Picture 1 (cartoon, rainbow, N blue to C red):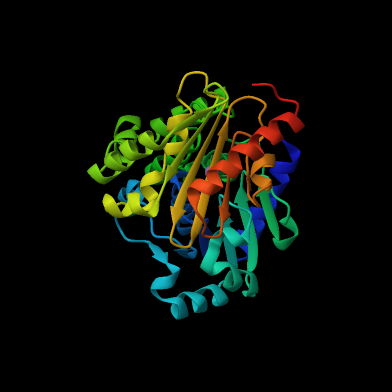
Picture 2: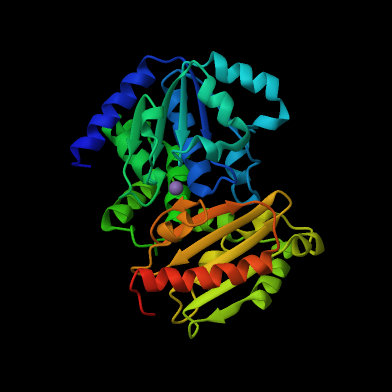
Amino acid sequence: MNNKKIISSFKSLKKIIGESKKIILTTHLIPDGDAIGSEFAMYNYLRQNGKEVSIINHSYTPDSYQWQDKKGIIKVFKENTDKYTKLINNADLIIILDTNEYSRTKSMEAVLKNSPAKKAVIDHHLGTQFDLFDVVVNDTNYPATGELLYDYFSFDNKKYINKFIAVNLYVGILTDTGSFRYPRTTQKTFLICADLISRGADPVYIYDMVYGQLNTGKIKLLGRFIDSLTYHLKGKLILGVVTMQDFKDYHSDVQDVDGFSSFIMSVKNIKAGIVIVERNNGIKLSFRSKGNINMRSFAAEFGGGGHKNASGASLPPQDPYELKENIISKFKVFLSKQKINL
Ligand SMILES: [Mn+2]
């Protein structure tokens, strides 16, 4: 936390929070553990500071994280568009967590942008439109927004990190580091988690709640996903497809695909994994890689973005298998342009 830029952003954040009474928190579509955990940690911190806080999201909370919301705090925008639009317009401050792109808030994008409220972003992704925010807390060296928030709360006062916040930050760090195995996991990550555990986060319980509650639909979907895998470039590139029919057959939902892309990255010798998910409103692509293959650049060819080793893109509805062939040829060209020989 010795970084001057981040400390100065913490000061700006604390100031803008101090000047605000009504605060809205939101995050990206299909929120992951870091998104939900960060929202709840920030929610609790703001409540401890006497603020009126609402969390309003575009998406419903995935099953894996519903246990964190025993009180039903998270509201879903489409459930009462008029009411939540009013809340957003009457707020003093909107804080967007775990994404810096308004477009990732989907149905809420226009309302958030047009609200007279001040806007802050707390995030660890690369960004290009930071001028759309009054306060930017962003550092891509962090493995999770949860770790960034831990530093912010510590900067303010560690007393705020109660058990509820500790649990939620732990969920964010656990999930965004892929259970402490992705590249940005550091000694500091473990020191922070040790402190969170000392404040009441139970690693055994949390892991079980997040990863140990799979429904049979997801297991069957995973089975079909494994059947769909095709191996290219001597097994260094693996692609998988999940279709609308798969979801229908197993009464499962897009949230059940969570973890599939990291699952294929556990295959021996794999360097790149691509998952194609067909939904009724379009196709969702997940790109994963190891080492120097820059999947953020590759995702950009499909209008997407993300990190070097994990990125994604959304495309209009189309045949997922034709798309797959197209992706494979594009990926080969991409590798040769990048002078990468797998
Ligand atoms: Mn994150």
